[in-house]
Length: 171
Length: 318
Image (cartoon, rainbow over all chains, first blue to last red; front, side, top):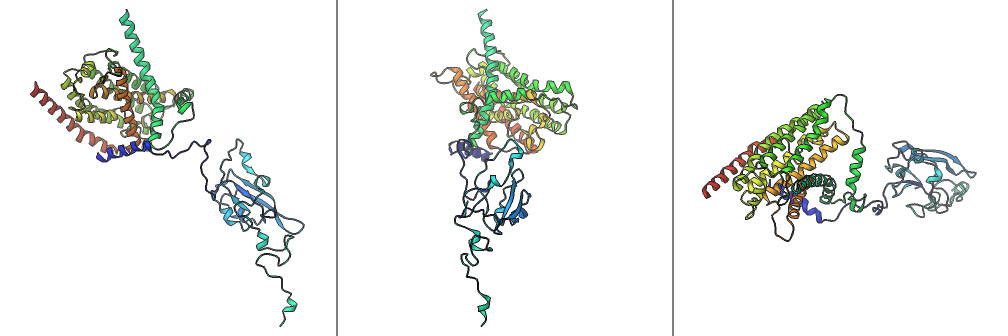
């Protein structure tokens, strides 16, 4: 009985505390930089697509909402011919971002993507691709690893030695 | 002729006033619950969201009024009207200010108790007529709860009647000129408050409609304006119990003269309405057997003891 009175008083005092809700459309909430929202495809510092169409994101996606079709350009560099994310199925788990070997696919702090038409939630590659580098600045996959596909000569990457001429290796 | 006109004006005023307050409580309750839960509450419709009431009313009028095929149709339709009727009838005996009372009955208090007993029918009948096991369970709970809490609701008021020497509401208020009855009758006040909450089946005593166990209890099958009538009936009940507490224990319209009597009445009434909402914001629902044993084993003996002691004191002073 006394504890009821005490809790009545404590709830009454909540009246003078700061509100925890905000007026959403007028005031935007703070979203952490790693907030998992809308998915984008980023570019490397040379403004080329980072995505190498390895299909790991599509494989790891628990709802199978990512579909892509790989192709190669004239230098043999792989890139996705189509890249399609169905956001009406996406659960924003972020596994695709974890799986991506080239930091191409990234989740950004944006959740305001409501649509009247369900079909409008299927984003194609031109909707997904952004002009920047997203969360990882200055990172270029082909500078670190990968084959020579017109980006760099053989052995031209960072932390990579010049190719060794096997004929001069003989002792 | 002039007196008749004044009487009609009072009737219309009381009717409109109480229904308006009951409708306004939709907004007040939502806003105050939000305030006590550190939220903002309704703030979209009009300044501070005060037109939320209008929006809710328009919405509930446009809802489909669906009568399920398996219900007992006549009783199903009548049940929601009973609560509104009985509560509005009870307002007839509430003195809002000197002379502002619809019917100055000499048995006003008994009339109030009789009308609040009639209110139990709405729960029983709607629970029965819905032909649904959740509604039936809610109806059974409601009947048991209201009948058992009515017993000491009446008993708790006997102390007031003994002190005032009358069942007439106006005389009860006038008897409090020296001291509000809340001081000599504090036990009676607490018991009446608890019984009043149980009588209007508000939280924490909302077992008839306990939404976590019984969906919506006795009004699970109701929709549209029939549901709206239960809703308004509940708010009217809160207003009624608050004004009864004000009249019986807090001196009704009495107060320092710098404010008119009706304002004092409304201030007291609204503070009890807010207390009801605070109760809803705070307390969890007790178990059904706890509610019953609490009523019969604790409050009933206390009410009897209160009547005994008050009677002895009144006799001694006589």
